[in-house]
Length: 294
Image (cartoon, rainbow, N blue to C red; front, side, top):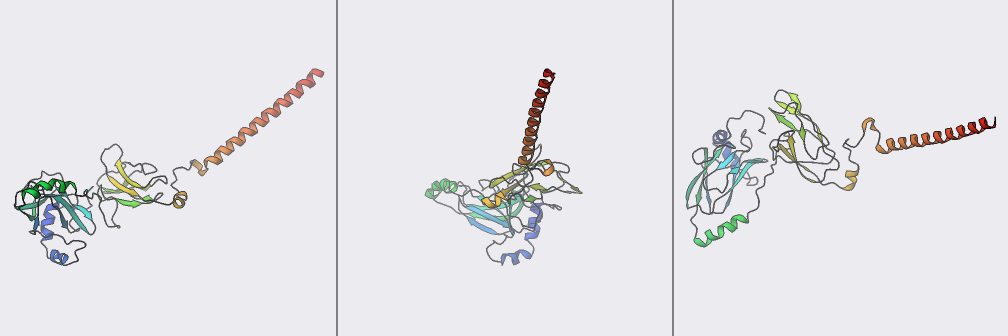
């Protein structure tokens, strides 16, 4: 899902806004979070290095765009890591020494040098045969890329398929979508039902309840009838006391009566019926005996 608002082209916005004076002010801030990289910045790397590319979060629509270069093992994907947007990419082990451009392009667009918007350059060092031979093991030892995104708490959920928020069992959450999904249903193993998205204009919402018996972990949300994962969320770990007091409304039968009450009433009615039947049999037997004696 794309963020709400007009997309002026992630790569174009990146080029225009990173060249603004605000970039130097952001660069003067503390290194944690890292300062955004201005257009034209020069980086240095060795084959097998993993590089992090940082952009300011106020650029509209760039989340999910790609960071591309022919030196990368795989393109990087810009992901929200509030308060910045970052992408990671690894320099291939067989990269010859030289200076290489890094560009940005819209997600899914054919990647290749000269097809995106220029951002920075990377100078790849010359390395010896021994270091190059050890490079594949170095790359294999790198930790997996962090796919989950951290969005501002005040933003509607989900802003992307990897906008993972944490909810407690029994919590009511409000999935929000733009430009799609009106009168369509969502499904997730952690929901008590299939909420229907409704709304006016370009924004639709629904209210979903997290099941009380949903175990802690990562859950997926899909549109009913579609295979794509539209959103993800995490169910928090809770203690036994909190879980036992959880109420999600999914286990209550119609009319609000609990199963034991309905069952008890049925058993009572059954016992009363059996007693009435035995009493009627006795009375019928007594009447037959009296009739015979007459």
